[in-house]
Length: 211
Image (cartoon, rainbow, N blue to C red):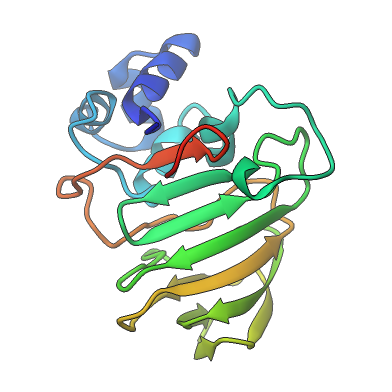
């Protein structure tokens, strides 16, 4: 079951009482950008979608999970994670995707070859730590950049500009935890510009469908 990004954006825009023109102005994008997204004629990168949502404003995680209808709970089966896919290059699985008033994001992240959080580099309040489970990821934090392989990890202040990129020909899987209350990871998904991406981002509750 693919998540209908266009229908959700249109419904939220109506809920906030905004025209396409008003939302575009608040988000700093063109009217046509809003129109094309709502018609599902383009797939926005994570960065592009977040920029639009900032005009409402609403958090990216809330955009995808606000209607899961799940109560807070302690334990989650493998099929109960919230799953986010951006194109065919970056996949996220979040523990407790609909948990109210969350203060932590615990993620399994898969960066397929070419997967890239992109430019501009991410920067927001919080801290993040992670361990590479398989494959290799290039992590840039500030002026430092390093290739991390399976068994290696990282810890940094997310206020430092940072970027994750898979420059290899094999997938990379890592487990991360961040203290930010907003889902920022992957703000620029596969490096595809807004007007050339092909498939809209998908979100599933894995108990209902396969991403």
